[in-house]
Image 1 (cartoon, rainbow, N blue to C red):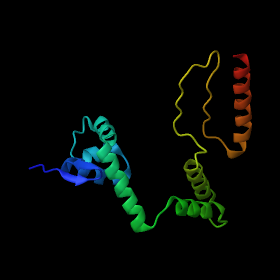
Image 2: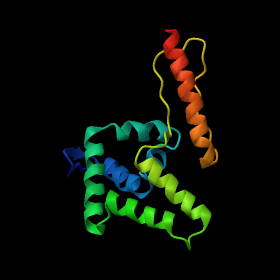
Image 3: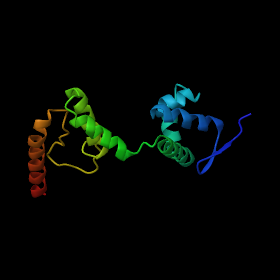
Length: 154
């Protein structure tokens, strides 16, 4: 019999509790839904729907906080370790770049998803592709100039 279990701020069904446990493994809602025995056909939408459930979101947050406390892993310690890797002269260049990218994402320097609401008349919204770090300043200057030109024309 499917007996509800208290968890987080509300009550989760055994299947929802399993979804939470599975989601904590890899943070992939679709795969967590499949492993929690939701339909493979609808796992993508089910996983996203489950993540919007307040009780499930609270259970995930609670479990992550408990894991962080048990392992003494904090965002500050992770950033410190990544920085040490990035500046270590013995680390390969590829490893250093990976550490810097992870740090950049953590502090919000890189945008993985761009949302735009509104209209840009006669212009193109430029989204930078991965380029060499030396090109970022030049690309940023070009985009700033385009934005200023657009703002002045309004």
